Image 1 (cartoon, helix red, strand yellow):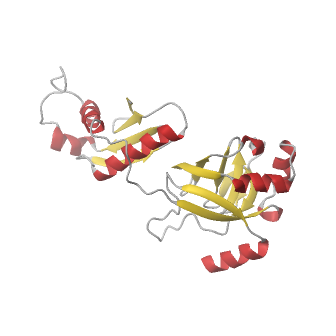
Image 2: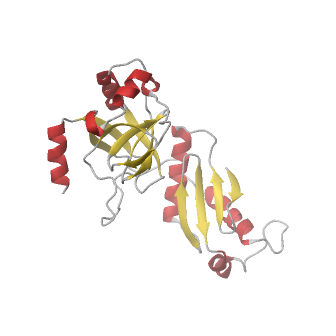
Image 3: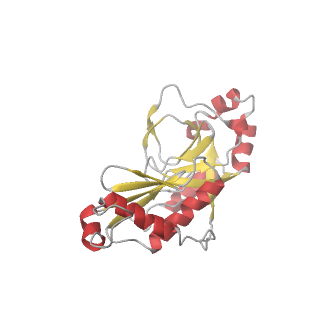
Length: 243
């Protein structure tokens, strides 16, 4: 693992250089350890595809740690150097086995029509019928690599290249919450209404971001997702039950 500074109060831990499940597993193990063993002055950690960024308060950290022995041959090392030394020591205690229980979340999707205005375009790009696109998209299991871009937005791995599609040449100013989209080799779900350029193929009635609940996001990194097609009538019933 490598360390890089991010400003004067954060360190980026580079876990790997490829987006795959092995690197993702290491990111999850490190994140779980930081959750259970925060060091003095640590503010938060942010897991991503191949990195974990640790934010800290240099003043609080130094008040607790900087009176300790020098780091290497540096008599007066910076807070960043000391944080890196502390993290290196913590990494030696990591266990590559995880006790975290992996969830599989079922997400209903109403494909096509007004909910999926780009479904036909995605089918045409790949020489498929719309039914084939739906079958392929809903036939795979997806891994949530990270949450980002918008509150609760899942970046998913595992989509078939058979339905890959370039982003729209002109992004939409408004994408409704719950929209399921494709961009390149990725698929995801817009948790809130936001501008976006992904190809929208459907919509889910399930709320992915509920700020009044704890936790406020339905999904978390490490979850498995399966999409399953529903009719417009089923969508409306589900939406009504969601409130």
